[in-house]
Image (tube, one colour):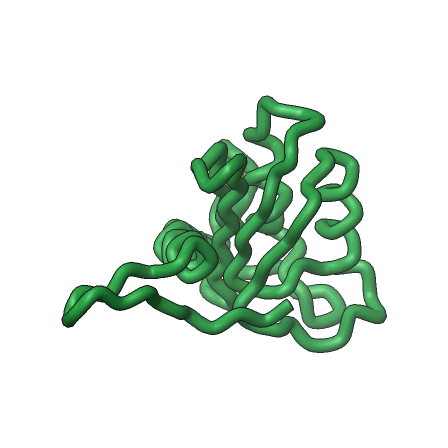
Length: 135
């Protein structure tokens, strides 16, 4: 699902709709990424409240792509965890009507992981190419 930002208007005042709001926050979260190849951010919400966020980067304690370079296999960086994986790893809730907002379309593995955590809706802004592969 690709979504563009929308706003409600009251005179000259413009207020972002929820989807645009959370996608903008996902963009800010992506700025924490340590992979120069692609910066991705994810936000998981419950009833329009942020539950957790995540960005793509190396596992805690491991060297970052920005320090030692990427490990590219089949066009994908293998040094980093995906933003969705990091957000799900920090998730402490199960069984609630959660939504995930992501800067880029999740891969097949991240979509399946989201299902395991009962994420019922995934919204992204940018398509991410062909999903024939696993990452």
